[in-house]
Length: 212
Length: 212
Image 1 (cartoon, rainbow over the protein chains, first blue to last red):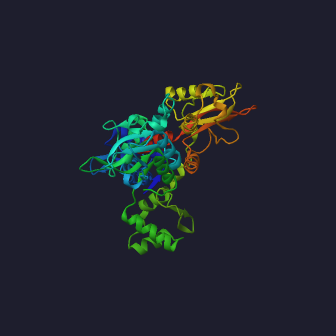
Image 2: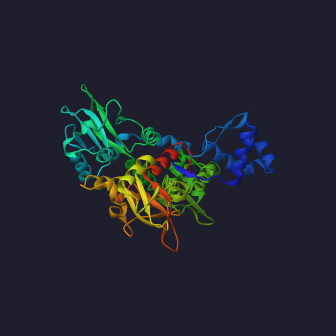
Image 3: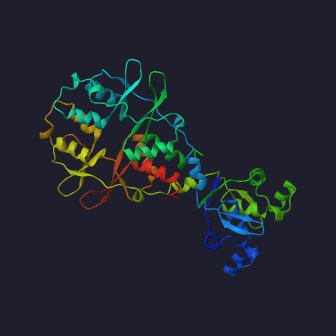
């Protein structure tokens, strides 16, 4: 895979075919006041790069695939499992105060809360903890299950989900992180964490030519 | 711009030029048992896409640019100004309690703190506010300048900075957001906010074929 930039004449050809296609090479050449031979390399480029298709006795027509369609197609196939982070999990009976300490110690923005069967029961964001901490309550005596966002109001993702679907979801819902879960008989088991930091890392990897 | 996939013959040509370049079109054709004319479109593609360069009386040589190098080059040229968000700014004398309320109202993860000349003096993250709120202090009576991260310990970026440099910096320093600043006689004026959410949006735009 590589990227190419179209030159001005190729852009002109695209425009002509968009407006008049299907159209023969001869007719394109006429409109540009050039010979068919002169256009041959440009038409080859446009055809091989997927912009145009050529049909015998019909002519060239526009495929509707605009620039970078293939890159976009590949990005859409990236999966959560290849980029997820390790989750930080706490028990539902831990105090809010201890949860805040865990958050600082582990330096994460989101904690996942589980019951004694290690099944996901809640999520705690920095925002949740901040909201609790400005209340006039004794943080050391409140268990997190009182203040957490609880099932079934928790968005989750799975190993095979597409990164781009999750990215859009995080933006739309203004969430920083999702648990990556595995379905079990008892409920969801937390096996990973997928965050905007993972997204940022994917972007850096793309610019350093490490993905795709 | 578009992405193209090389066909088998083009891959063969690349391999031959890698191993034998600089090499003339004639000699490449010989090795493949094809005519020079047959190869012309392939060589045009490989040259225009940046894989090969051609020099008169020397021949074709391999540029060393592997697939997606050009995409990576373009990603590296994205600038902060094209993707930044609007900053949320508070005065340094505002109370910690009011700062937390502002953070919830505006739904941002980071506040920028300015003095009466509107010059940047500090930054407040959710983490800073959470740390303050678990202390045994009266949040309504402490001004934010007591607890904020203050100049010169604040990382900033400018409109013309490259997105990828900022992305790497955010990951490395585990920061969620940077102020976008303008240099003035008095100091830094805050003109934007650049976050991991912006990075996530760039990634989505790439997958939807909206950038580059």
